[in-house]
Image 1 (cartoon, rainbow, N blue to C red):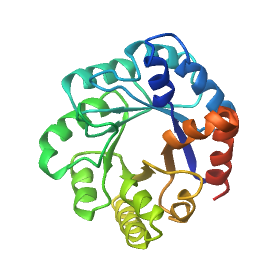
Image 2 (spheres, helix red, strand yellow):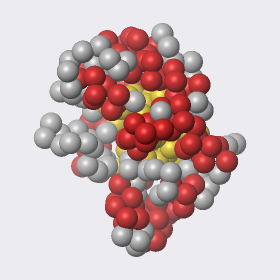
Image 3 (cartoon, rainbow, N blue to C red):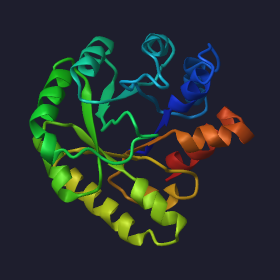
Length: 240
């Protein structure tokens, strides 16, 4: 089975929220992304609603023809929203109000009970549950034990190391985590900071089935247009 691309459209909403207006419309961006090769659409409904809004979920449900992945904190409010919305999958992520973007993976080991309850509540509604974690084997094992169906490997440290030309150690951690997760029966995804250059070595990790990419696509869309920016990285992912 080939590799898949999920396009995160949060930053389309970030631009809209800069003026609290109606444009650009994340749902329109989702439609363009799908037509340009995206295999799914990812959105993060944050507690502070800094970009994606509740109304966007309703709009997306009427537009997206592939599948929606909802990134969310493991809170009662977000669990209720996800159970009502019923996306194809939900990815549990850490969330702090003061952060600019997600800064690291979940510490599943220290939150196992709460994450297990959230995972069970989501799976009860037929939602595939993923947990966004750093590539540590103990976190992979804890994710399986917490009842997740998948892991999404946080690739931020790898991407930072790639800028310095010293990324082999981080890439080895990703390989090890992906292999271990696969051996435990977990689906493996990856994301955060990936772009058309640094994704190339990660594409060679056979166990990673899907990549969720947002910021770099929206940034390149300023110069190339959204359709071309999605198509550029979709061709890389699908050709891997």
